Image 1: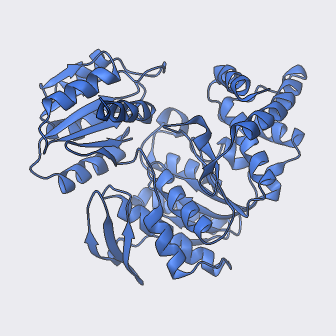
Image 2: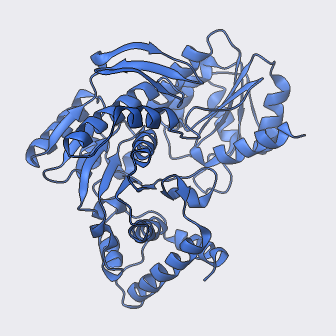
Length: 430
């Protein structure tokens, strides 16, 4: 099949939704020759900060000469972003060819009543095939949902697990307490590996420590007391962490300093595992790391920021970043959320900061909360709110109502940020 046919097929497979469990994945990969067994992985789980950790690590490793695969979801701008080697997206021809191969295995499974793989399982399988085909030295692999039963957790050849900040999210799948969620996230930890963790709530930290003891793993944890000379800015940020002096990053958001420290802890562990990473290579990788959609400034005069703050923990760090970078500025929000998220907590944390808020319905997703219902929830906290009929309308109204020194922040579900970015860029040319 060609690329267009492959995309149609993947859209059709999406009807199976999201199903946690590894049976389908193991069956599918077995029919494909278990390509994942020929690869080495850095496996990343967590609630917030997974993508940033992946960006730092894959950029550092590529810059150090390791052929590095990266697998991410969701993507904001192009479907093929989710599968990359050394920063280059999988090409259309390779994706079409590999979807053809995977489809044959899926069809055989279905014919034999051996399961119906989900679209995430299909994508994960074809990513492993591609990374093997591309002879990757290492793959930085992000979980889709949770850890224990996530489709990516079929891998057995991890050299390291990274666990970013754990918070309350996806409770219907992962559990109603922080300990249960942490247990699920820690499910990616394999025996005798090196685990690197962000600073966690004590309840989550204890779970990670226990799992590491049970599986005889080494554990490195970000030390919040080891930061010095932290200078925040939405165009560049610098900090000192332990022996790393004046590290520069361009990823914005006050929380990126701690995400960067997680990457530095991982670098130190990789060095002890025998990976050659020079100080210059690490510093270049940290500075070059790029993660669009996570407190990204996409326009100036007025400043427009997009951020995927869709749960309470992410909303808190978004609030901290807005207050740090834009103190005394008028803030205008564009918000769109999923109905199954704790959007009430997100509203309570962020809405009081805004001079005006425009709500939108995230397009093309059955989980989307309508703009009107979101407006009704927001106005209980901030009465200066209106519902827009489209993302374009929201952008036009926000641009019209702001002064040059004001700030527009668009946040909530990641699913609408790519389209919003395109709308903002299209207006620049008008």
